[in-house]
Each structure stands twice: as structure tokens, then as C-alpha cells.
Length: 339
Image 1 (cartoon, rainbow, N blue to C red):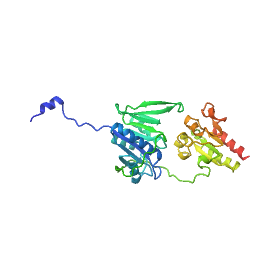
Image 2 (cartoon, one colour):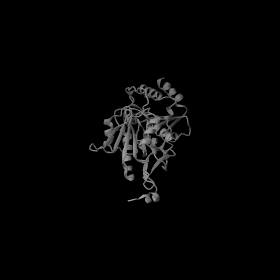
Image 3 (tube, helix red, strand yellow):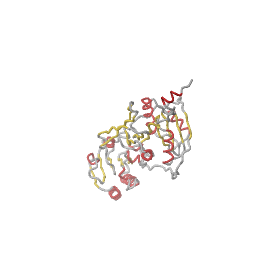
Image 4 (cartoon, rainbow, N blue to C red):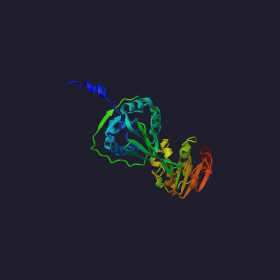
């Protein structure tokens, strides 16, 4: 039967190019175990996938990445996991994303993801939402809708992505870790990306004042304002307090910003999603003082704030405030304690 007239009427058959689809999560294994924040993002991706009728895939990278950890991601909700033991270069990661065409790409808003996501979005000239505390789907537009805190967490801005791939970083602690199902099955694939060299990491034992925060009489907390001064100054201040008051338990803590910078572990974070502490003395060094942070320390008997900015929100909540650079004030405090 001659159907040439149909071709003339409808035009030649063109094979449609495969478009963007599925939700992808990038997980980073600095050590041979999965990060809690990555599992939280994976669990939320699983919830979002039902709105799109999509699969949840993951890219597992990092020095500690392995097939065993990839299968753990399957147990926590991924349908397919690509993994490679290393840290991909920017162009290599971009090429991988261009090949896999994720409709939505999610990162944990923590060390690694906070730098990787913006650089990737810039290279791909696509949508990016950072520091999201809630995400949902507009099913009619197949668009990612994200809530981002503004005005120190007092209000939220809601944005909607319009360009694929839609990339977002999600703050740790805002979603629960999904239930582990050891019977889940999925595909695991080792990928060969272009890896960039990483400096060697030398594990060291933490000082004695990195103790459970709930047990501390004195908590010394550092924020991003410690960047120029150096985190070691906080530890030196803690050691000075320990020498002066050996009968008191002294602990060092950090804000979410300090955790994101990699200066301190998340188990020592004071925040509404971290630890809520009530020590006798709380010293905030280089801490801006957002609502989320104050919610973690509001029960302290005495709050002392050190910040170079006299308009920093932390001074509204402090019992005593010192306006000055932490790199100048902290050494003076140490000298006074040792005198």
C-alpha cells in the first residue's frame, strides 16, 4: 500500500530526542560511610518523584565512595546509583549531567555540594536555588518550587524553577532520614569521570573540649566570622577557660556556617536543627545570630557576643556584647584568663 501521500501531508517521521527526566541526587562520601544530609535529600527526592512519575537516581562521589555504599543508597530509596571513587572536575561533572539529563538535580547544602552546585549551574546556564528549607513540585509545569529563608529566617521567599536541569541545594536537618529497606533493588553502575587530585587528609584525635554540648558548663561557639582569625583561636580560648576553671566542663561548638565551612563536625552544631544548649556561660565569637541559631542557645544563663559589626542580630539577645574583631578580642581574653 502506498502511503507516500501521508508523508507529504504529515511530513517525514523524526525521532524525538530524549529530554530531561527523573530526579537525581548527588551524594558525597568523604569517608567510607554515607552522610546523613545526603540521605535526607534522597528521602525528599523520593517524595517528589511521585508527583512527576519519575525515578530517583543518585551520583555517589568522593574518596570513600564504593559499590557497597551505592547499594546502601538503593536501600534508602534510590532506583539507580552511579558511583566513582574521587572528586570530578567541573567540566567532567557537567558532561555527565548533560548525558544523563536530570529534570531535577539536588545537593545537600553542606561541604562539597555548596561549591559544586553553583559552579555546575553557572557552566550549564541553568536554574539554581540555594539554601532551600522546603521543596515541592508544581505538577502542571513540572517545576521545582522551593522555599528559601530571608531576613535571618524571619520570612521565606518561594521561587519556582523554569529551566532544566533544575538545581537546588537543601539545608541539612530540614527533612528526616528515610527508612532503610534492605530488600529494595536497583541498578548500580560504576562511572569513570575525570577526577581531580585532592590533598591528603590526616585524621587527628579531637581535643578534650569537643565534648557533648549538653554536658558543658561553658560553651564557646564560632561562626563564619572566624574565617580571618582562624578556628584555632576558639580552641585556645577553650583551653584557657579549662585552665582557669578546671572544675567546669568546657565545650567548643559551631554555627551552621562553621559546619558548612568544614571547621567543626555537625554533632557540635548549635542551631534549631542541631543542638539546643543551656550552659551557664555561652560565648558567641564571630556569630551573626540568626533566628535558627538563637533558638539553639536561648536557654543559656549568660550569653556573651563578640562581633565586629555593632548591628549584628546576636547583640539583641546577648547579656554582654563586645564590638571588635575576634582576632583582637579573643587573644586579649586568653591573656586575661591566664593572668
